[in-house]
Length: 132
Image (cartoon, rainbow, N blue to C red; front, top):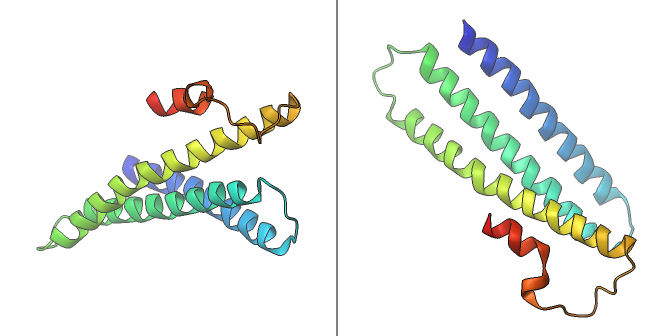
């Protein structure tokens, strides 16, 4: 069926993303570099990994609900699917905000702007992203 193709391809995509994030987390843990952006990179990959695993859980729950319509009690699976659907969005938004903050650090580095000088909160481009 068409839903099976969707679930399989989406599952593969999120599985690849989870694998990539996990490998980056392992590589980051093995490196003993004290880069100032290391914590931000760990946060990015952690949020991406968690969001991918939660989306895989959602796809699996939905596939189970679609392909087993005769099961009497779908209550637990519906609640799990709803929770996984809802939890994905804040995790992916957190990963996106961490990526924006990482890009901001790179821009400061390229432009040779001193990051230790506190700028007013309204001059931070990340505020615009949060408001959108």
